[in-house]
Image (cartoon, rainbow over all chains, first blue to last red; front, side, top):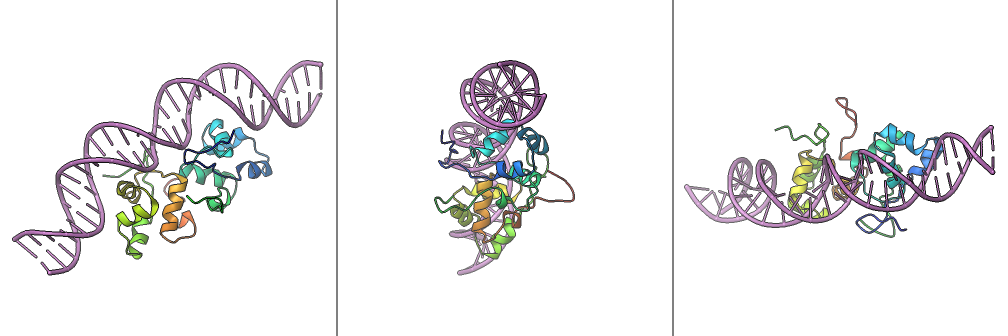
Length: 80
Length: 80
DNA sequence: ATATGATGTAATGTATTTCTTACATTATAT
DNA sequence: ATATAATGTAAGAAATACATTACATCATAT
């Protein structure tokens, strides 16, 4: 189970780590962000390239300043 | 013509301004980012909520550090 | 005034995100 | 050991991002 996005690479995120630091459940995060739990699961697993606003809302729900704090966009392994 | 996104508000961006500072045409930006010119036009007009990776690529093509430098995500008028 | 390059509009199609529902597995506590 | 909460998987539908093509308008230069 590689959980690849349609562009061939998984989307790396730090959602799960930061969510746990805040002792939040997937369901709580989903509510905070106004999406379904399925969406949170898929994001944590890097299964897709979320919309900008969703990425932003997740970032804020996790108390971070920049989207780049949560979503890993630069990577030695690949270039978008 | 309000150019609203499906969620009811236009997505404000500073693409056009920064593109012009760099003396880039829409077509050049489109090529740099690997999308069609239509996509750039729609983005400049705030007609949709781009994917995170597209937002990132546009940001980098415009030589900015953070996505938030190009896409206005906090606004007094509305909250996502 | 006209040619040319840059920007805009519109219609239709395809790809991918996100939702919905339902069930399965894992962790935690009692 | 069993109940309960949390996480995961899967299939299908819905919404919307993005592509494609073709034509229209605007700006600038000659």
